[in-house]
Length: 67
Image 1: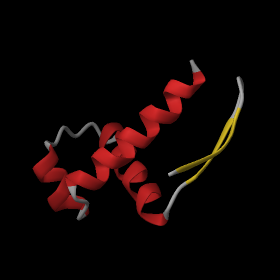
Image 2: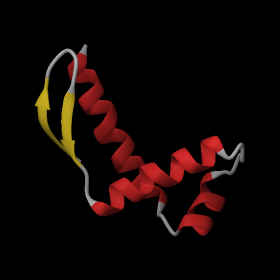
Image 3: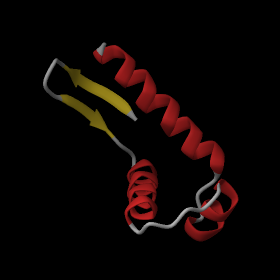
Image 4: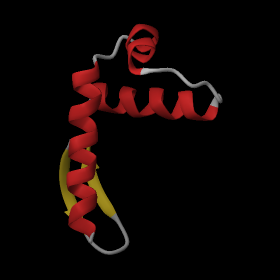
């Protein structure tokens, strides 16, 4: 994930195909009402926990810049 533009109302980021897939998968799990742990998530979606944690770190880092 790379931050391109940041202002008070809108942010522009670039996501890799893998990062976009991670976000789509997480949103899908949330809105399907299913509660899975990280091991199940890895198995179901084929996404390693380290990749999710890296994306989480990047998102939080960008969010902190909004403050």
